[in-house]
Image (cartoon, rainbow, N blue to C red; front, side, top):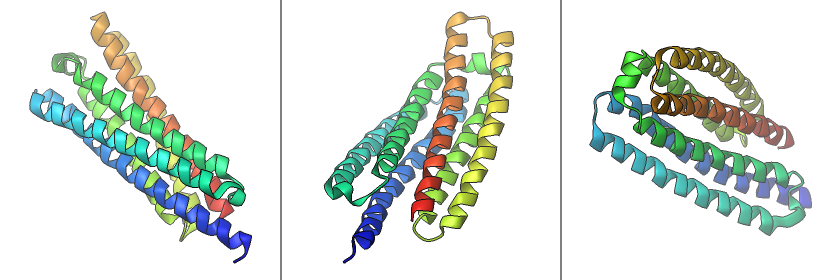
Amino acid sequence: MYSGELEVQAKRKAIAVLQDEINRILNAARELALLPDLLMKKDKAGVKAANEQISSIEEEVENLRRKITREVADVGGLIMNRENLLNTAYTMDEIAGYITGIAFKLSNIKPTTLKNAKLDGDVSVLIELVVDEVYKLNEIVRGLNTNAANAIELAQETQKIEREIDKKYRMAIVKALDEITNIKELMLVKDVIQGIEEMSDKCQQVSDSFILLALSL
């Protein structure tokens, strides 16, 4: 078998692990999307269950990141852009970490703080947008081995979502600063909103990495 064929096989095996990783991140993001409503309903059991599920998924993502590290190391020089594969896996691991951090901080905000500042809807919309962005990543990686051109088009869609999140992030920050007087609550809300924006940036980094992978297949 030619070395080129071996490289393609190695890449596809690594991409299969990336797909498992992004599937789990998408599940965690969907759990995060449930939190605002659970919080506003003061469903403590639901909030706890969602946080536990998110933490469990983060561990699974970390294990998959270790798996792809081992597999890329095993094939050694077969994959010319192995650094990109590894950077992608590690950045995806960071996305899972952001979800856990956002969920924890959001769970500790008083529902009345969000309601009085009329930020409950803003936070929900921001989370829904970043879930959409993760969903696009899931679609991109699914298409890497079958339709690279479509994967590149989907990557461009993540840029639109990221720009929308940036716009809503700035508006939400201004509202929080204007409406929340309790410093502790303000810091928590600000951290949640900023965490979503930073998570979105990480998603965009992964999207860019997927384009490079698509072009190399």
